[in-house]
Length: 102
Length: 111
Length: 136
Image 1 (cartoon, each protein chain N blue to C red):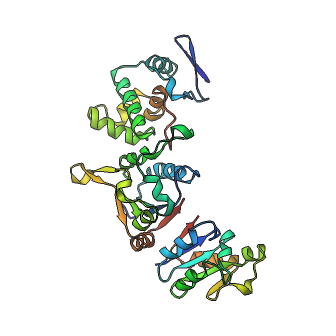
Image 2 (spheres, helix red, strand yellow):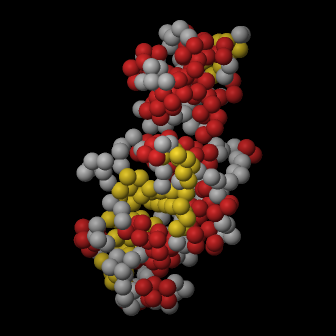
Image 3 (tube, one colour):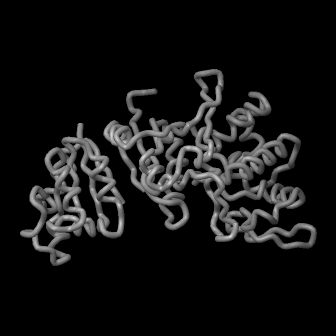
C-alpha cells in the first residue's frame, strides 16, 4: 500500500513540498507538477531536504511543466526523475491513493 | 417570490423565498411565510422553527433533515421526531420548508 | 458498517479566512456526511488555525464558521486529528483550540472529545491508512 503525492506550488512561496516530503512514507512517490516543478533543480534551498528523502521516497517531476517554465531537465537534482503525462498516469495507477498538496 | 410584507415593512427574499437578511426575522414574519407555504402554524411547527433558530444561533448552519429529526426526537419524543410526522408538519420537506419559515438559509446539502 | 464503507480523509492545510478552502472543505464534509463512510478530518500546517478558539469575524464581513465544527458530531463526524508539530511551529498548543465534543451512541451517549492531537509520524500513518484523501 503506497501513496502518490502531488505538489503543485512553488516551494519558495509555500510549505507544501516540505510538508509533503515530511509526511511521505517509504515506498511512496512524490510528483512535482505545475509551479511545484520549481522545486526540482539542483542547488536550490529545498534541494537538501528532497535529497534526504530521495532514497526511500521516489521523486518525480512532470517534464512538460519543466519545459513550459524554461527549466533545463538536465539540471534537476540527482535522484529526481522526469516523467511525461503517460508516466503521471502510470504513477497514479501504481499507487493505492493520491494525495494533493495544494 | 422576492419579498414579504409584514406589519407595513418589506422583507427581501431570494427567488425561492428564503429571506436574505436573517436579522429581519420576527414571529409575525414567520406567520406570513407560513401562510405563503400553506402551513397553519401550530405548537409543533413552532417547536421545530424555534429549534432550528437555536441550532443556527449555536452552530451557524441549518441542520440537515436527518440531523433535525434526530434532535427533535431526542427533545420531543419519537411521536413527533420521526420522518413521517415531520413531513406531515412540513410537506415540502421539514428542513427546507421549516428553515424558510425560521428565516434561515437553505440547509447545506439540500438540493 | 457494510463492506462498501470507505475511509475518507479530508486534509485541511489552509487558514480559515484568507482563502475559501477551509469553508469549502467544511461544506463538503457536511454534505458528504449523508453518505455512510468512515470519515476523518486532518488539520496540519496552517489548517490548525481553523480550530482556534475566540474567532470573531464581525468586523471583516465574513461568516465565522468556527462554531460549525461543533456541529460535526451531529453528522457523525467524530474524528478530528490535529498535528502537534504544526501547532508547535505556530506557537499554539491544544489549549488554544476550541473544545469539540460528540455523543457516543454506542456508549450511552457519553460526551467524548472529537479532537485528537497526533504527531507528524502518526499523521503520515493516518494518510497511508485511507482509501480516499481529499485535499483542501
